[in-house]
Image (cartoon, rainbow, N blue to C red; front, side, top):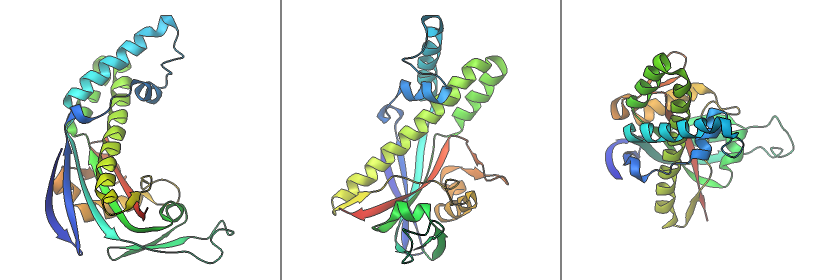
Length: 228
C-alpha cells in the first residue's frame, strides 16, 4: 500500500492511496452472488459455474490496479426537533463549504464530527477484459463482471480499514460507507466528488453525461467519523 499527499483544497488535504492485488481478499461466495448463483446451492451439473468463478477471480485479480483518492473534512450536521418522528424531515449536512440536505445520509452520519469522501477504482484493464469476453464468451463475461464487483468492494473495505486504523489512534471510529445514488442522495453528487478529489487528474476517472463513471468498476462514498 502506498499513500501520497497531493494538494490542499478548501483547508483539507487530498491523499492518494494504492493497494497491491495480493492485499485484497478474494471471496468466491460474493463473486457467485454477484453472478446470480449460490456456491452452496449449485447442482453437480452446474459445478462448471464454480470453476468459471474461480477462473474469473484469478484473471481479474491479476489485472486490477487499485487506486483511490480521499479527503477529510470537519462535519456539521443539524437535525430538526421532529426528525425522528417526521419521516419527511431531513438533516442539514455541512462540510468543505458545501451544504445540502438528506434524511438517509443524515441518519448514517448521526453523531459524527468529521467525514471522508473517497473515490476508488480498479483501473481500465478490467473493463477491457469484460468487453473482450462479451464478444467471444458472454457467459464468462458475466463472471468477469461479478469478479470486478467483488474486487472493488474488497478494495473499498481495505481502504476503509486503513482509514479506520488511522482514526482509531485518536479515539475515532468509522461509520458504514454511503454512496451517491442511494436513498435521497442524488447521483448528481458525483460531480462534487470529482471536483473535490480531481478524479480525472488523479485517478484517470471520468464521468459521462449520465453520471456513470469510467472505468466502470469504481466507487465514490461518504464515510462518517465518530468519537468512540
